[in-house]
Length: 195
Image 1 (spheres, rainbow, N blue to C red):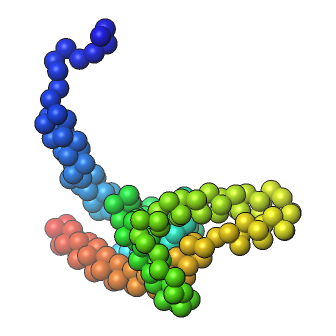
Image 2: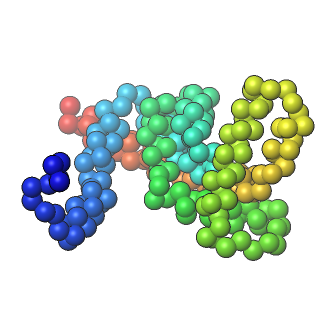
């Protein structure tokens, strides 16, 4: 093969390098912490922004987390940069747990008795996200209300998950706000004492 490797790789090395890449969060964690330490603003503003980003990560609206977190941080006069960092809480490793939890809590609120196997949640959610984007497109680009209503009536999981995410958003917002405000306050006091 003209463009092949000179040295043959072994399966063990491939698995080792894949796992190394998968669990190498040390550098990115350090980068995020450095950015948080250098961030301008009071500890209240930074903690408010982080809380907004973390809380918005519990909503089922993929693709809108960044926009929603920045908007919420702006409305509450928090740090929008910290809100962006807070949205990193929602990532491919945490989303399946968040989605399943929000769906189960949403079922409790609407007293739905239909049992759904977790293996069907992700494919159905993918299909509903496509319908949701079509619905948003139709709201902004067309005025065909029958088409909008038909698209909205096909949604089963997202309204349930949105309802179930509401208590999780509130709990995570308050917890993360108070935790991060105390951490940032203690860090800023420590820096102030050094000067």
